[in-house]
Image (cartoon, rainbow, N blue to C red; front, top):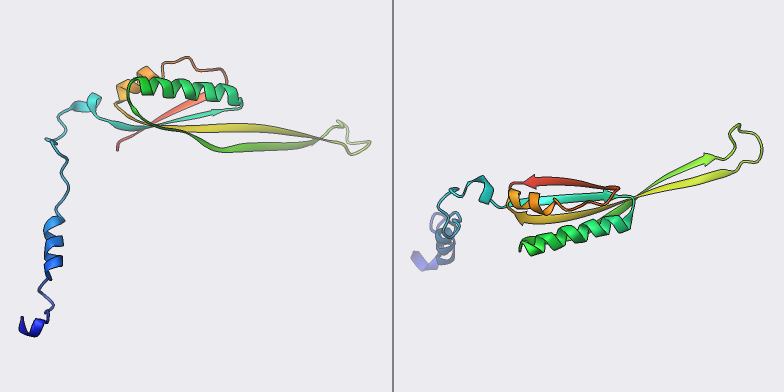
Length: 143
């Protein structure tokens, strides 16, 4: 190169090294997907909802204890914001008399637990006794 100038088509040494290192990533020891569907590790999200916090926390603790016994990667429980459903109604059935009101509130609590495990192991973990009033939703995401 004349007088240290670069022309448009010639990469610098740093750029040439970067271009060489930007090959697609290959997992170490990855020989394809020969392990089958059962051994494949999925990202699994368990969503728990309930009106009763004590029952909800008990189910969360049981699920996490079971997952840690199986030596799975666990994240959670993530406490989502509580939904507060409010309903204000008149006390009087006929509409006459003093305007008095009742205020009712229903609180819905929600927890998220993320697991990294094969799908068949999750069936064993979720086979625990679930407290009354707790809804469990299991979502499997291919990671």
